[in-house]
Amino acid sequence: MGRRSIPKSFRKNGPLVVVLHGSSQSAESYDIGSGWSTLADECGVALLFPGQRMTNNLLGSFNWFETGDNQRNGGEPLSIRQMIKQVVDNHAVDPSRIFITGLSSGGAMTSVMLATYPKVFAGGAIIAGLPYRSADNMMEALVRMNGYGSPSDHKLDALVRGASNSTGPWPTISVWHGGSDGTVDSSNADSIVGQWQKINNVEGPNTGGEGRQLSQTGLVRHGRKGCDRAIYYRGNVPRHADQC
Image 1 (cartoon, rainbow, N blue to C red):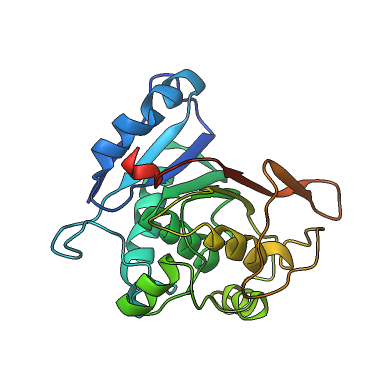
Image 2: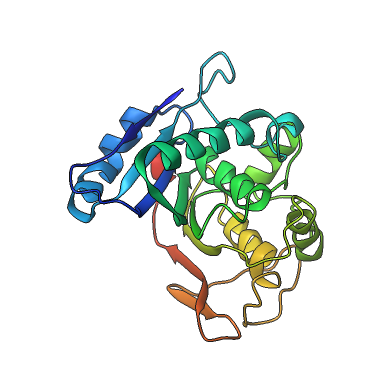
């Protein structure tokens, strides 16, 4: 289930952006609200909007917290991967220019896709999301969303490394989160940064593990070769992004 948008401005070997909606949203409503299709028309970018079925989740959320849907070669990650392959094959997308972004549960599923299929993506933007496998069931998911009990950075790093057989290179990660988000606590953004910091050879302050708070706004962290490997922005947003 989902939709794709290939604008007239798209050219052979152009890029693809995969866009994952949040809870209580559809692919169509998130596209309208975010303006992705308008931007894609202007820039010549192909878009893929995978959509969740209400029969799979009553809130329309991606099941990022279910063990059958947060691992490689199964469930929702495999379905999204197959959708990507079809668009790449049918529309002459450059396979080295595939990106993914998502909001809320879509942001959490973006974490899943980046971890389980790291060689597919050049980069990803996680908006108001959660780290890969910070939860493995609904109860844990609710606790993590409230900012409690997140695994240590060391454990989160190990979960990404164990999610595939990849040894790199790894996708560039961009993390965006409202500092006053009352639905998904912003400490999850800190944990996402901690999850990807070592694997991407990103320089920065010591990660203090659980409970660490990064207060920087507009922080760009550089990899050892001088390339931007992680961007972290915590803005003064009063509500969860899909409620604005």
